[in-house]
Length: 305
Image 1: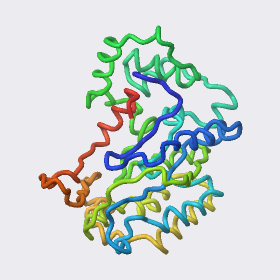
Image 2 (image 1 turned 120 degrees about the vertical axis):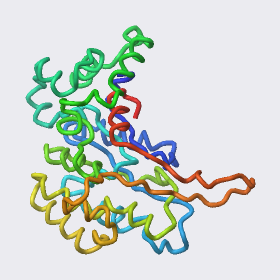
Image 3 (image 1 turned 180 degrees about the vertical axis):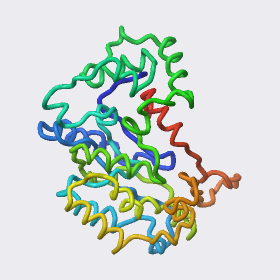
Image 4 (image 1 turned 30 degrees about the vertical axis):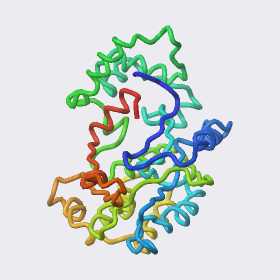
């Protein structure tokens, strides 16, 4: 709404840009003549500072990103990791490669059912799907702020396609992985971007239990892939990845309970403990962060994520 730029960058609150040229690297992939028709998102690896010596808890996830991520390049590309990712906005709005080849044909009634009743949001969606961008004369700040407040409301997405047909997909303890797999299911590819220097960096949890909770999304890749109609080689690769190198569900009791249908918990808070500062200040809460899928979805609708 506030912008209908064709691309969005998704970065967790505990990550920061480490390579000022990473946008150029990503655009070289997304704006390529072939990538324009095939690539939905560009995923950059996660790398952390302030980790323990020799990284005993595997926070850097070297195998997952350096080896498995590169290996998946020939199988529709890497999974979506939930952060450090450049997305094509129209793909998040549900567009498939077939839509691009045959043309986008969607009725006003269908748009309203999927995206809700906000006229300003519908206008933004139509512009995005048709490849149009705003001009300065099209922007009414006060009107857009009022409309943004409407779509940011927690009840706006009720009985719409948000979380199911468009946006980030709900119903999973790792909505990022499920969202990426649903994008691959439509026929899109993704690309891995290993920039030098590393594109993004962040603060890793330093305790065993927190590290296990942080990495639960990695092994849940396999569980999410079961319900997705992916290409067979990729499904086999994900199953092997799950069995061979990733932590077991036993390491994350809350995740195991969710998979067994015993618990409805779909989101855990992972505390990030920053190293003590040198200024003598109180850093007890400096490494903590909280999030909400619905808040994130609201940012996507407003175009500010």
